[in-house]
Image 1 (cartoon, rainbow, N blue to C red):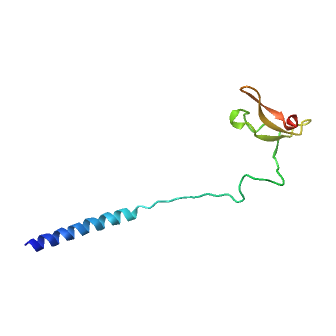
Image 2 (image 1 turned 120 degrees about the horizontal axis):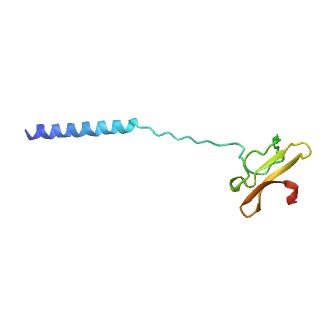
Image 3 (image 1 turned 120 degrees about the vertical axis):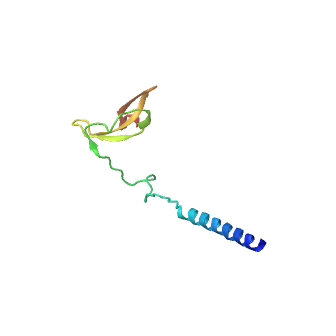
Length: 98
């Protein structure tokens, strides 16, 4: 009798372990890695800005340092978003900094 009980216990234990292992093996983890080649930063031989008659967006602390090529008649210059006074930002000609 003792042998039958211990055999039933071993079979039950193996069944529980097997079902648990099978359940966990069904869960999968998916990892996505995105890379860019060449790297989006570095030294460039040439940089081209898309001409526009209007600034690309607001000029504020979040966009400070952004550039755009002002294609407005009479302007035709590169402008940069910069802080003109504490807390005030505006698009200024890039030549003003050189």
